[in-house]
Amino acid sequence: MDSIDFSKPLTKGFAYPQDIYAVFYAVGGWATLHLALHYLTIKPLGQIVYPASKKSGADSLDLIAKRAKLYQAAWKLVFFSILSGLGMYILYFESWTFHPDQYFKGWPNQDMSDLMRFYYTIELAGYMYSIVLMPFEPKQYAKDVIAMLIHHTSTILLLGFSYYYSCHRIGIVIAALHDISDPFMELAKLVLYAGYHKMADVFFAIFALSFIITRNFVFPYYIVMSIPIHAVYAGVPVPTKNLNYAFQAFLWTLEVLHLYWGFLILKMVKRAIVASGVEDDIRNVDEDKVKVE
Image (cartoon, rainbow, N blue to C red; front, side, top):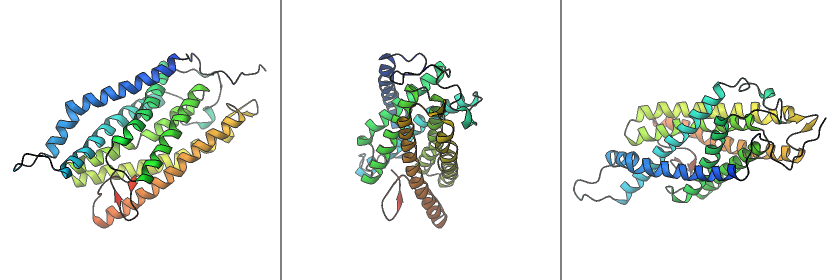
């Protein structure tokens, strides 16, 4: 059997440095879309939901803070809807989607469509742009900023290396699993800000259920644990033994964060039941209460 040169990218048609440039162009694309939507739709929406005081006509600090959270939720709804929608569309037409034993079959000679390549590009760019936005987002607790930074960094590294080493099947599944539940959380926040508490409860319940199922059941059992079994080529872990272990380390890092956030979600569910309604998001909290990001 011919040996494989692991020092070179294995993804068919990988173009260096064009593919790298494409990711940075896509970061600019996300930023352009964000700014356009912010001024054309999101900001006007915020002013409708949280209008200025009729007496003074000025915006208080509390009003500005409330609008900032609405702006963030509205953008994230668009962001995650685009990513999750495209990811689900791709996986719907692939025969290997629900078969972890097929994720590495035929490696490294798996075909990669232009749509898959585009999805990888905007996923990588999206998480990079999310890191850029973090300092400008509404106040968050330090430990939650660190957790989110670790999550985004681990995801970027996993996606980047899976693309480089032609492990894109499992890479696409990982990305899609991470995006699918988030639109429901952002919807829950938006309708809550608009004053529709019962509808917010419904969307939060959908978010909680989908998050627990995809990230605390499907992800560890069908993704993380499938690597040692199926990520093998000619009896050797792929793409290399050391990188295989590194991939597993990053995946387990993500799962630890999923378990942490899953705990917060269950805490939020308990709080919602006691208080007869959800209050806000769950991935930025202090020691005593669950609070929105």
